[in-house]
Image (cartoon, rainbow, N blue to C red; front, side, top):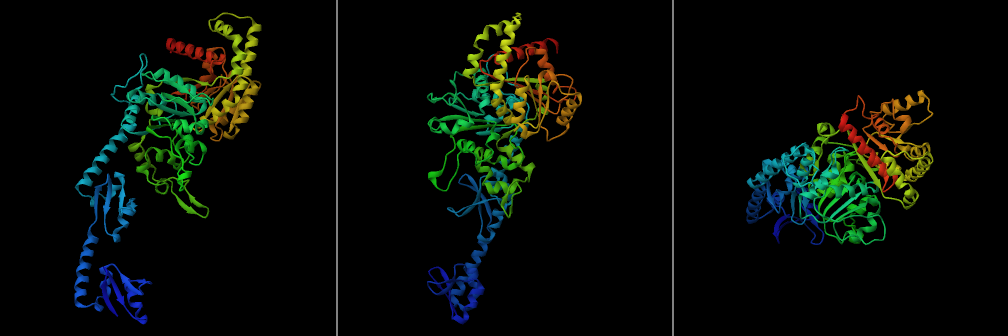
Length: 589
């Protein structure tokens, strides 16, 4: 047996019978040279008795230096990230702390100061200063994400004003490149997004992606709140040329068909409204919006590019933390690392016989703190109750239909006369009521789609209609959510059963009622959201129906929506009714 040094490595020359000696010492077999070898002096030291005196001295000196290297563990700031300088034997220290391995530069690293803070005792002065600075900044951001007021001057149109909590939300968004505005439903997230646009004069091109039923509502809000003269366009799937800029509003369902045109515009702001609709990373909707990575570059789909991204949803998590992955990976990929890192930490990920189960939840307080520190502003209705009116009313305008407009055209003058209080002949009133019924039937598919979208954000919902066939068709279309009905002709016992089930049974999530039969004498305070699919002529009747969800026992503000076709009789009626209700409340309440 002889230990020698050749070309920077240590080789053990041994007979076949001696092969177990270098193997047990940790040497490796080189089949091409037919020799046992090691590159490490501390391993070679195990066989030092087989070395000559000169090699013994070199091995001992090199082993001593290597032992010193093992003691070097330093966290520093380099390449705009935190890097851990340590020996291979100490690799578990950064690995267990959540650092990632950079194979190109042969170093453990993280870009997250929170992860780096776990190894603060190893940090040099530069890294310590950076960690403490980021932690202080993030603590401020967490506090700011809860604020319900802010002393900031944000441009707004004459006669309009942001609520104090909306100002605080806009201020948070302006300090972050990408933001998740996650205020509870009904707090005006769209106005906060428009406030961000108003605050930066360099913003010229804005793409707003939303459900189809909210496109015209976004158009109205943009025209109402924007302080600069930006061209506002709504994409409806026609063959008209795609706008070259300005504010462009498009719905999720047709997004993929316009990606080529969208990618040709340099977007300053990209808004995803109801962004929880992007929770499934395999859905065509999500792929069209956020792209899809693939090992084969030719099969990759790039996300829509923009300088700033705003995700808007009142329910960023519908059931479990895994639903947040697409959002946080799009808004702040550096902080959250890989899918595996995220699911292991916050989804209680574990392997089963069927693969990885990521449907759990873990470390939720830490998850909320990191969200608020990095990307999320969220306030609850209970925190801003004093700023909200008891009832908030919205008119949700669906794209007009030629058949509806053609059918209702002859009643334009009649409607205006009625709204002015002029008595019209009963025959004329009956004819117009028949046409409104036909319009309501045309609205059923849109109503069902809108209700399904609402159920992703709300646990309970009250829906009011006028005609029995409309009510029954909607009930059939949304039965998956657990529906009870109350309509004219129902017995008192069945009425009470429907109310009790809605109020007390979590599996019953939708109450469907006719405006006249369900609009008085019952309590539906399990919901704080009411949708009118049809309207009554009398504002007082509508107010009574609204009071089913805003009675003694109701906490905070309730949200009421009127679903109408653009330029229809119902659209004009809804505007007039809401205006009259507001006048009555201002005068009497």
